[in-house]
Picture (cartoon, rainbow, N blue to C red):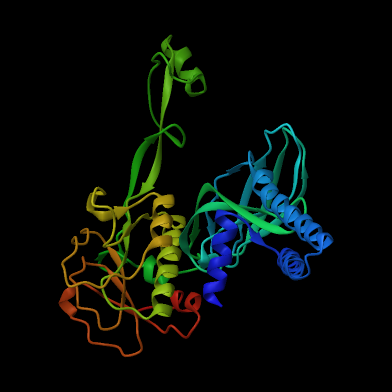
Amino acid sequence: MKFAARFTGWLEHHWVNPAYVGWMLLGLALFFFAAATNTLAGWLYVISGVMLALLMVAALLPPRHLQGLVVTRSPVQPVTAGVPLEVELQVSNPQRQAKGLFQIMDSVDSGLGPIPVTAVGTLPPGQTHRWQYQMPTSHRGIYRWSRVDLRTAAPLGLFWCRRSTEAPAVAVVYPQVLPLQRCPLLDTVGPRHGQNWRYSPLAQADSQGVTRSLRPYRWGDPTRLIHWRTSARYGELRVRELETMANNREVVIALNTLVRWNTTSFEQAVVAAASLYTYALKQGFAAALWLPQANDSAQDHVLRETPRVMHALAGVEVAPTTQGSTPLPQRATIWLTAAGAPPVDLPAGSRQVVWGSVPRAVNPDSGVSSILWVDANEPLEAQLQVNVA
């Protein structure tokens, strides 16, 4: 059966594949031809010849029917797992004659599900058929596929013909981001001074905020920043210099991919990394992501821009190895790892999130004041919001 399916598929892609009616008509033509050779009846030869001529015409027309059609694809926008992908294809007919009665089959990545198919009744000359469909997503990942198939049996329906055209697509599905309302693990990250965690707001020059000082007007300064009362007093234009208060708290979300993970636990760790990163940004942290497989050209293997962080988490995979990796940056770190992983030296004020059920002793001199143990069988959102010692 597999050989027959491969053979018929090869016929359909490279030439034509007889439909059920085509096989029946071919069998009848051969039957009448055999009967004619035994009886030498001329009318049987005529019937057999007419059937074979009809089959020949029906085999030549479908490939010509698909010639000239142009397929283009719009970029696929990234989505979060659980949100369907929006895919759009355009099939144009630059020929002088109308096209129709064909199928469009988008050969999507097998990880996204079955191949979507739609039918086009008619496509007038110079017109474009726009096909938009949604592809459900249940798992993060970077999905790639390269072709679109056009399939038809027109005009007689005796032979199927399929032709592929290049239309590369890349669909990025980000990991789910949990709506954390609180996260004591991250809120208390960083070195402590006495009974309080470090919080040192820094003043940064900006185009909005509070007034820091007044200076003489320079060419190009916006007129909205002119302080008219002071300008009238000094007889020259004076401009306000503004500043905003910025938090200098930094945190690195580090995902340890160099150990052996349970599949469920690793997917939860990726979701936790995305959720903690998003929560840290909302809380005013200067958040970053560290991955052992980060691009070597990236400084310290640390990713800071949100699109790059989410793209990296969408495609991250477990890669256990015995080789050393780039050392962690010397900043407060949330270390996501699996139980049984070799211990690492983390900066002071760091935290660990460990997926496993058996706690292990923590070296008090390591600078790690708390470990959050996560059970992969329990809801992750609730566990990330519990208080830690």
